[in-house]
Length: 367
Image (cartoon, rainbow, N blue to C red):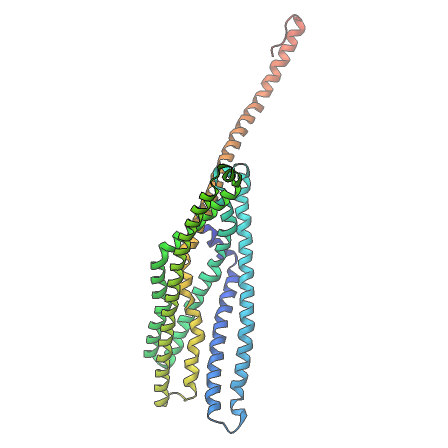
């Protein structure tokens, strides 16, 4: 069975919910950006000491509106996203159960106990991050990438192209480099964790044998050594995550400095009011929250691949078993049909023999 069959069908089934989630996610970040924009404008305008409070009344209302709107939209976004993902997880669990249920009598001979428990407890749970932490953040980042470049192009095409280059580093270059650097290590960590899960499960199921053999200390030492190896690789991943976050923050700082320089130049040339300098600069930071998680989202894909491979392997075994049972049932059906076709002939022979026996009583019917 194709491993993508655990992911792709749900995009079609819940396409409406996914579209709503993407819309709400985009609106959440836009509301946050407008909140910072109006806040920057309000601070700058208030610093000029307007002679009447009504001159800053509109940005005050804007700050309240975008502040409340961002919180409400973000809550609804999370509600829709988690509701959709939990529905998908429910379908995945039912599907996995339907694969395993016909093989209930043969599970121990076909799979290791750790594989089954790992698929039920870890792989299915891991796949919820495909939507929440990988697909949705990446799509929202691409939407905002296009929207930001187009919006800045209205003011200055040259600076819009420069900003597109900065964001290209955050959205494409850094995620690709992070994936290339950690792909093998992520796969190794995932597989070794699965191995630890299998080893520990088998040990718990056979703890009596370990106690009787007197090798429990040897098992614990080997398990702790394997666990230390996984922890060491996991520390390497976390160290790179800190470096990746630092690189991303440096790019954001560079964008903010460039925005200050551009907005100041626009104000000096008379193309922009000075109160908009802080407004444009503060907009950088909420928008950065949409682009920085893309690297982590792409970096997780090797772990999803390992989980999908194990689920596909289990589902493939279930399909093969079902095919075998179907073939056996078909063969049994042919035998039953053949026996049913011979019954009329047997009845005719029995009637003939009964008539013959009435004429010759000394004969006994054959068994």
